[in-house]
Image (cartoon, rainbow, N blue to C red; front, side):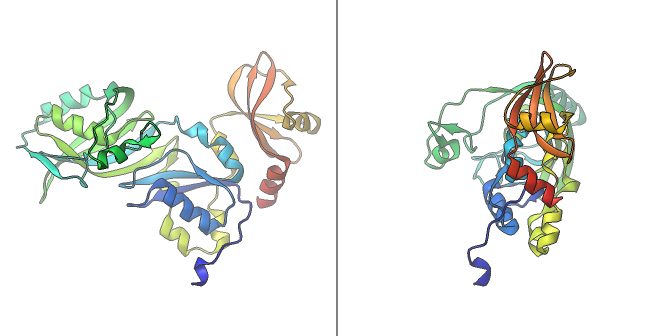
Length: 313
C-alpha cells in the first residue's frame, strides 16, 4: 500500500509529450502522469477520446499558462474504418445497425478522397464530449436521447485512403491532417456512406499535433518504470510551447518592468505572437504581442516560476 500514500507535491514546470494509452480518458492519463511527477499543477492541450491513442501534450506548472495556444493546432491521425458495417456509436464499441455489401474500386476511392479534402461540414456525433446545457453529448446518448446538433465547418488539409482486407473483412486505412474540432469517427462514417456501404471506426491514433510528433512521446507504462530523475528529464522546457513565436530578449531593467505588466517600447515590427526572454540570466518571461512599436504582455510567468525553471535546467 506504500505507493498509494499521499505524495509530496512539488513545483514542476515543463511539457511532457505523452503517448496516451487505449482506454484512458485524457484526464485520467494526465492525473497519472501528474502523480508520477509529483507535480502541483497540470493541464492538457485538448483531449483525445478514451478509444484513441497517441500524442497528448501535457503541461506542468508555468506551461499551463500557454496550453490554450495549442487548442487551435492542426492535427494528424492514422485511423482504420471497417467497411460494410455501421454501428450505434460510429466505432467498434457500438451495436451493429446495418450490414451492407462492399464494392469499392480505385475510382470510387479517388472520388471520395477528393470530396472529403478541403473545407467540409460535419455534424458532431452524439457520442462526443461536446457539451449542451453543461452536459456532454455522450451522456444524452447513453440515456437514449438524441439532441439536435448543428453542422460545423472543419478543414481536411490532406487525406490518404487505402483499401485493405483481412479476416474480418474490408477496411479503409486513413491518414488525415485536419483542423481542430474535426471528428475522425464522423469522417469515417461519412466516407462509408459516400462509398455506399457504411463504415465504423476501429482504430484511431494521433500521430502529430501542433508540430509535436509521436516519436518524441513517452508511453505511460514506460514513464512508470523510470526513476524520478529520468521522468523529470523527459520534460521539455516551457518555451517549447512558444516555438512558433518570434523571440524578443529584454535587458534586466526592461525585463523587470515587463514582468510587472508594463508595456515596453522598441524597434519591433507588429506581431501577434512573441516569446519574451530576459537577457541575464536567459529565461522565459512570458508571451506578448507587438503593436505600433509597443511590446504588450499577454501571459506572464511569476518571479517564483522563473526562479524555479532556472533551477530546474
